[in-house]
Length: 58
View 1 (cartoon, rainbow, N blue to C red):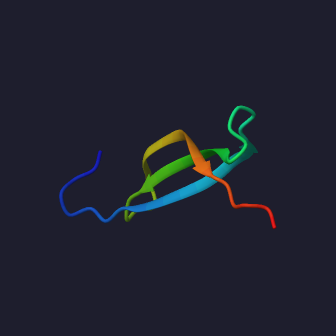
View 2 (cartoon, helix red, strand yellow):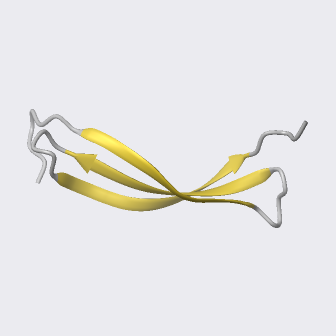
View 3 (cartoon, rainbow, N blue to C red):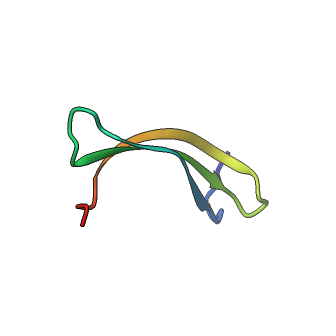
């Protein structure tokens, strides 16, 4: 559990990136997120999927 006064750090790790097939100007980024307390214990973790705009190719 997280208590008032705890200090939390968040760590995000990119699991996968790929281009969207249906929208070529966008990519799909899968991320693993962890919240870590002052004792270096993981107090929360989850995976997320986000759609991001891609850089234009030059």
